[in-house]
Length: 109
Image 1 (spheres, one colour):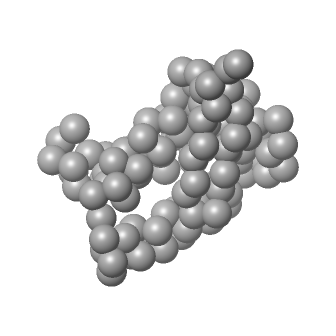
Image 2 (tube, one colour):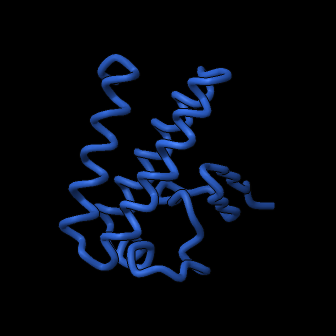
């Protein structure tokens, strides 16, 4: 039996085999241009995976108000991501900024 990975973030759920390039969403069922672009690009898939890892590191240590702010901020960020559509440069910039923001919160991880 294969291991399953369950990721829940801002209304996004990925259920599938656990592997190195697991995105925070299922590439088999994505519908948006941004998600299709991420699924087709190794660097963006890696960035999505790293961003999700950092998000959950912060979320797991958060409680109450801070967690709500984090979750709401992630929802806003996802809207910005989706607004990039198929523009890989826009997506890369957003992921780099979000990853850097999360690393700063975690103390340079």
